[in-house]
Image (tube, rainbow, N blue to C red; front, side, top):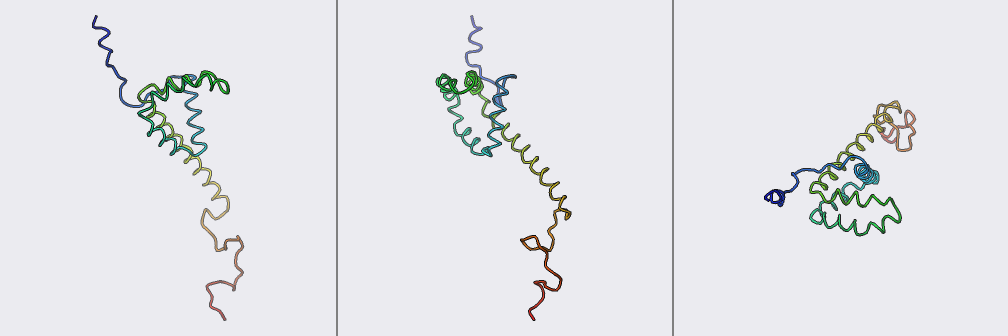
Length: 147
C-alpha cells in the first residue's frame, strides 16, 4: 500500500541529465553542433538559462506542435527533444555540451592558425614591411631625417 507513496515526491538527482543513446543523443549533438557552427553559443545559452523555469512547458509545446513540424522534418525529432527537455538536468547538459563544442572549435581554430604563421617563413614575427607587404628600399627608411 505504501509503495506508491515512496515515489510520490521523487525527483531526479541534481546535475545534468544525460540523453538516451541513439536517436535522442544524435538529435541533441546535431543541434548543439549547428549552434556552435553558427557561432550562436552565447545567445543559445542565454535563451536556455532564461527559459529554464519553462522547460517542461516548452517540451509540452513541442509535443503540441509536432504534427506541424513533422510535415517538414523527421516526425520523431520533436518527441525525442521533448522527452529530453522534460528532465530536470536537460538544460545543464545542453549548456555543458555547447561549452565543450565551443572549446573544441576554438582549439581547432588555434591549430589552424599556428601552421599558417610558420609557413610564411617569419615564424609569426612581422617583418619591416609596410601594410602593402613590400619592403622599403635601403636608404629610404622612415627613421632617417629629411635632407
